[in-house]
Length: 112
Length: 114
Image (cartoon, rainbow over all chains, first blue to last red; front, side):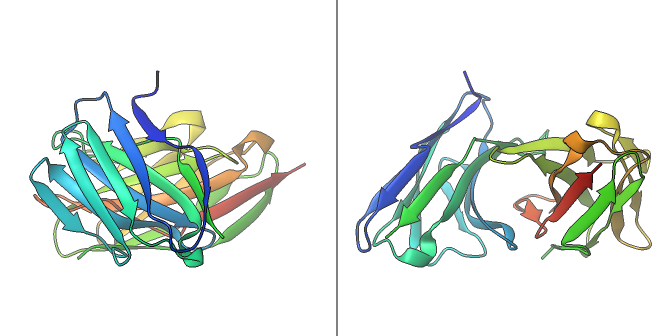
C-alpha cells in the first residue's frame, strides 16, 4: 500500500459544484501539504498544516479550503469549482526531522 | 520568504551526453534543498537532497548536485544521460526554521533523444 494515498485519482465535475479531495498517510508525519500542478507553472502551494491544530495558507489559497481531521488525514475542498481550477493536485507529507516531502500519486481534477 | 528559480524550462540533449539543470534560490536564512523527478503520468520522486555537510550530494540514477552558498545555487548534473532520464525535474527549497513549507520551482523538462 502507498504511504500517501489520494482519493479520488481522477474526477470530472461541473462548474459551481462542491468537491472534496482526500489525503491519508501512514508515514506518521506531522506535516501535510496540498499543491496544484499546472503545465509551465510547477507545483504551487495551496495550504499546509504542521499539526492537527495548525492550518496555513499557501501561495494560491483563494477558492480552496482544507480540514485536518487527524494527524493522518488532510482534505482539500473546492467550495464552488470553476474551470481554471482544472489541474493535477498533489498531497505531500514531511516531518520536522526529515524535511523532504513524500508525495501521493495525484488527483487529476477537471472542471467543466 | 524563500523562492526558487529554475533557469531553463526545457533542456534537449542526446543520449550519453552530459547534462546540467540549473537552480537558484533566494532566502535570508539557511536552507534545505531538494531535486525531485516526475516521469510522465507519475507522481514526484525524490532524486537527492542537501540538508547540511558536504556540498556535493549524490542521488539516485547517477545524478548529483552541488550546493553553492555564495551563488545561492543548487545545480543538478549527470555525466551521461539515458533515454529513460526523460522527465520533468523540480528544484525545491525549504528554510531551516520552524513554520516554513517546501517551495518548488517551475520545473525543467529534460528530453533525451538518440
